[in-house]
Image 1 (tube, helix red, strand yellow):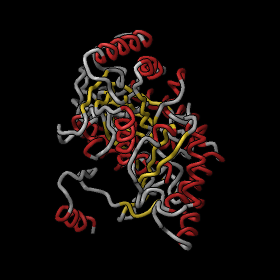
Image 2 (cartoon, helix red, strand yellow):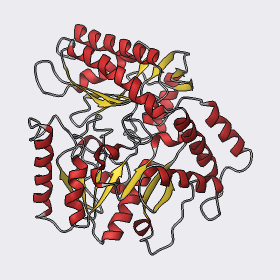
Image 3 (spheres, one colour):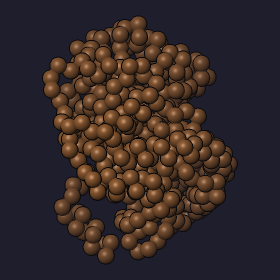
Image 4 (tube, helix red, strand yellow):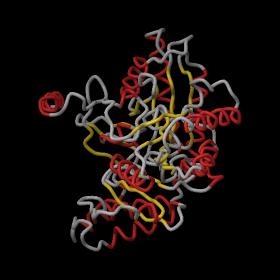
Amino acid sequence: MTRDLLGRHRSVLPDWLALYYEDPLEITHGEGRHVWDAEGNRYLDFFGGILTTMTAHALPEVTKAVAEQAGRIIHSSTLYLNRPMVELAERVAKLSGIPDARVFFTTSGTEANDTALMLATTYRRSNTVLAMRNSYHGRSFSAVGITGNRGWSPTSLSPLQTLYVHGGVRTRGPYADLGDDDFIAACVDDLKDLLGHTRPPAALIAEPVQGVGGFTSPPDGLFAAFRDVLHERGILWIADEVQTGWGRTGDHFWGWQAHAENGPPDILTFAKGIGNGMSIGGVVARAEIMNCLDANSISTFGGTQITMAAGLANLTYLLEHDLQGNARRVGGLLIERLRAAGAQTPGVREVRGRGLMLGIELVRPGTDEADPDAAAAVLEAARAGGLLLGKGGGHNTSALRIAPPLSLTVAEAEEGAEILEDALRSIHQQHPGKA
């Protein structure tokens, strides 16, 4: 049955629409932190639909809100007043930390970042954008144009002039051997030097933790130091919180708060987990920036009633059950367990991350050379053990990505760590040249 579906998939969908696993998986239903496939196999989900299932699969509070809203009206567009959209915008504006905030809802993180770029370039009257190396910001023409990860950038054509700066990856690159303070100073000097050779940019867009890049991040405070330089020149800071938002890092509600010495970003984008699988993205910006457009605009599907109902219910559950605190506590236990396993496993270069946003980078044992084959093999072995993971990384997709729902229990974290440890060990035993 699955093979038949795979054949149909290949006959009507693009070749570049990636599928995980040599024998692709059809997920039919989920509950809590688990999902089931079409053959009835049960898996502990450590990737949550690419970080979208933020609280839990089939969370009763969300499914009830969606069902009740669907019984009234599903959609009307932004041409009409929309109570759930206003209510969610009020909550997001307050939580954002941005003064005099305005919120615009989209259907995805890609569309949110695309909107942020339009706002920044219009406000600043510049089409030059600063971005981070190893970054990923979406699939649209403009978002691909600022993506600093070759594996996710299918064209060099772009409506923007993009300049890439150092700092998104702490343990690779020319400054990797420096201490944190010297690393930040070197990245700031690089930024200043770059700005001396270009027309005034509109903005710097940056993920506080790089998602597709393999959950890499700079030392805390880097973007605050960048902000000093940017602010002097009127350059905006866009924080891409599509993956880091809503408490996933545990230590903070937003990733930018690890770099908060000089205040909040000018523009913040979000998506992924806020809808718990429903299609919600959005942009938060100061009113003067959000209102700088001088032409009409609407969103047909951004902010539709049924997605807003899901977002409200999901956000309420997240806050009332302190899932940020759970991400900090359970994520702290999980990363220590994985670091202990990694220390005993040749080919594990680094176990990194914070909260429930963790990465394991794999290299060929005895070298610093990325090993994407090992990452693919571990993914397969973990699935065989009943665990679903993600992949990423700027060096040939050689990092495992771990991002379970934020309600993950200690027992489930232990179970997942054990399966992953066995998968790493088995791959090394079968293929000594692999992690």
